[in-house]
Image 1 (spheres, rainbow, N blue to C red):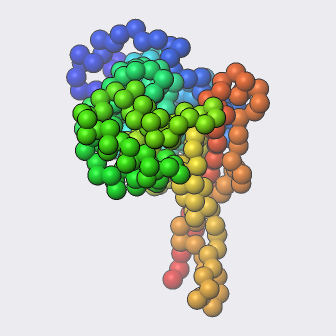
Image 2: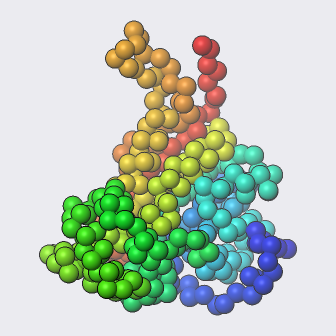
Image 3: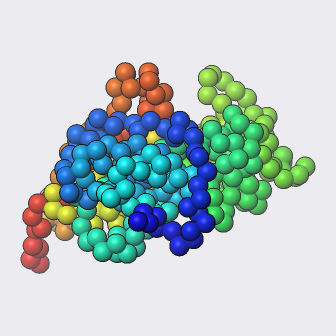
Length: 331
């Protein structure tokens, strides 16, 4: 049985991928408790990564549709989750296109969905992917290696103003203007080709102070820009929330404040029963009221988990549940 959402059978000749390279699933106990998968239910894992979260859901007897843009991730998943193949479908897709995948399978409603927005440690550790300045590699950062725009293209062709905007908006970098000017100066001597070229260009104008490398936020900003991550997240939340069955649950794990803010506002805007505006004589029912918040405050990893997996330090989990009854609105 072909569990692959691929047309090209050559992609099935998969290299033995290194299991360890994909991160241990973060907040796994919390995710399991809040998603509460049951036998026969259907879940979507929009960011399969190494398959850790999917595995936990499959172990409860549920069915999983797992998506990832990264073929390396899918090959690891296929191997790790082989024993569940009757309950698993794998697709190479971005979660913002989940609607098309579900339509192709004839799945109209999901019992739950999960997005884990962390970059996998496999991607960070694979120098060729260019996500990390700790390993010399090409300036790439594409989650989907087939995508058109790489970090090198952005860094070498964007105007100084555009770089400032990217570093400020996506990196929340206080020295955005100084660093952008430094990069423009550096690239006049020749294009920045590697992660190291970029890290050095940043270090030259923003010397290291403290444990954090001065290029940390710059790499984050470029990664978000290259993969259009914030827009993709907004689209994904819209798509998945419309596909949940009554009582279905949507769980999102974020790793920085920009993502967390988007999820927080999306959940809040869809969980308020009433909305009030100063210019209205009285509060009105919220036409977008579809959720009950299961996490009024986001959940963080326990100290024990952070010790075992330092990546969990910045993780935040928010979960919302689709209301059991659809409100009929009378205008």
